[in-house]
Length: 243
Image (cartoon, rainbow, N blue to C red; front, side, top):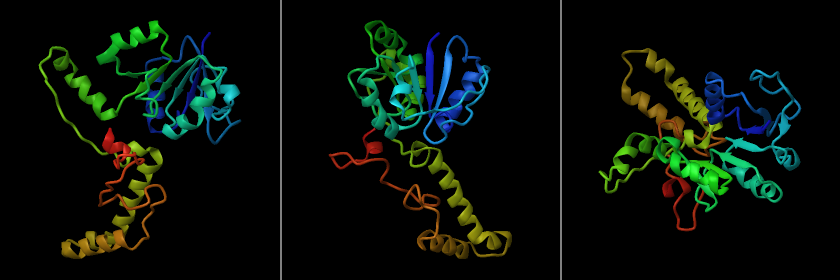
């Protein structure tokens, strides 16, 4: 029976994957093994086979025992682990992060659109299957048929994912910032006669006084915008701009 390792299954992307796999009864026909970056030894999730201890997601020997690894842990984890693992491992690496997306030995997976490419890759021995940009994936699911029929010459689309693209911790921090801003003007909001400009001034002052929770973002996002997202590229763009 194939051993399938899951990394990053508690985060936002991983949680949705777990939920859908359980709903579709997909945890059958293989042995699931759950890894963690912070809780090794604790009980893992019970997906119908009993809860087994979590394994260390940085343990290359443990990872190399897997036939397939599904990771939703993010790009930093892939950067840290992938090359070390590949040295003596020939299994399938399925990754939601963008780290390997442009590699020649990886296929971007969007089976409603490129199922033929995926099947051809499996037959030819490709071992790396990577999720695409979520915005592009959704766009192609709706418009892929038009491209196949050669009805669209080209299109341009742009998106910025300062919170959701950065993961669960950043999304929590955004909601925390929203709550802190609300708390700053809660008394004024409760008074229907308060002046909106007074509310605006207090919110602006709170945004600028340096007391908002910014451990993950480094700056307030609630009530604001952050143009610099993800990592810098040599051409001066951020990774998110490049995508």
